[in-house]
Image (cartoon, rainbow, N blue to C red; front, side, top):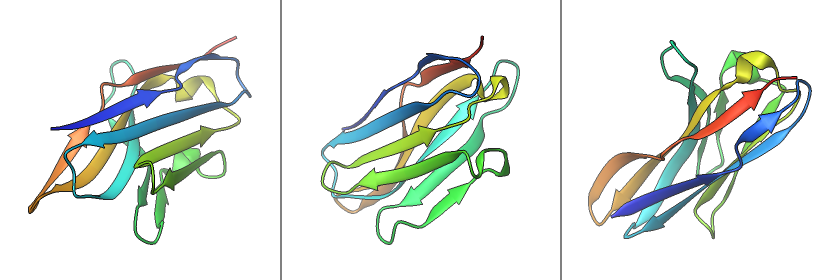
Length: 120
């Protein structure tokens, strides 16, 4: 089994910052990539940012470029999302996603979600 444990969500005022973390654990051989998606009420889930574990190649949604930064800790199988200059429209449930190889099988895993609320 693979578990993704997220932390760091909460309430923040517009213009503020939050840092999300997601740690992958369990019987895994390697983490290929991790990322963050979000889903606001009444909307579809959308990509926020992803990062490859080999090479550290990143990808961002246009709406967060210049404000959010994704990074990873290879030793801890952990991904971080530093969110700055937060806006009310960033309010959503944020989900960690991981592309993981277990033995010879490659699969996609999701965390349980963490709520980010941007409001004054």
